[in-house]
Image (cartoon, rainbow, N blue to C red; front, top):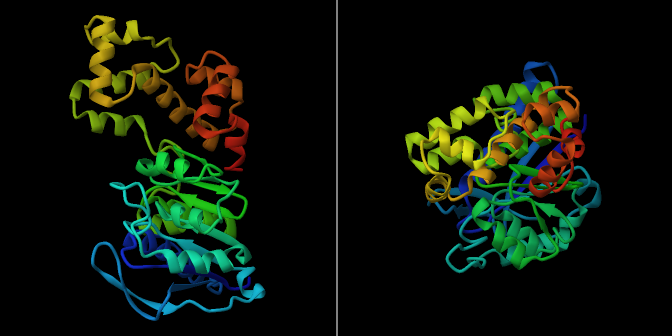
Length: 331
């Protein structure tokens, strides 16, 4: 197999884990290949406008090479280029770029379209967006930046609940550690499932996170609520997902009047009970679609959607496509 270069384009105040996490995935994939008696394929480089140390947002600097003034088509045709996020890429207080990414964006604008894969981690999607590399694409970013990404780049279809998302040659991930998930997806695409699973085991991370590709699982809702009553309720809901779970029944479980319960739940979690139940049903449905051969009808019944059409509409709202399209990503 030919060498697969992976280039990380960095700038002052980039997010360190956006680079170090995926980089380690590719390095460990090379280790797995050596153990299998095969030659390593990934050749990683960290590139910047000038050679030398580049400080991350944590203060730790990485040693970078100067990016090439020219990129040969033959080299770019087998390469992946990755843009990390960080305060320089997007400032949540101003909803704008924090400054300092202009040179990287100019270089990506000039050369990015030649690469076999163009990727971003976290708010690195803003760097690719300003470089014009995500126009007309579906893309993920940190959950806290989804509204800003959509507002800044109307031609990007933001995938709000994706851990990572692949749209042709464009790969984008959600916040920070999601870059590891995305890199594992690339390793699977390049080298197969067995190597990707081996890498995940070595790094002690999930090959595919529980809850499918959603950033917001029901477990996170309970954690955010910081209320044991919510956690207990979610456990009960999980055991009864195939049943009717309207506000009246949930309120009865909590020994509250329906209107009182609805206010209580919204205040504790930030979402309505109906939204939370749908989210939990989608979490289970994605797991079944990823790991089983159950029919769409059977999945809908086991998750309590009532019909295939109701589940299809829920998938369309959350993932931008029907259940069959979602399943196809894992086949």
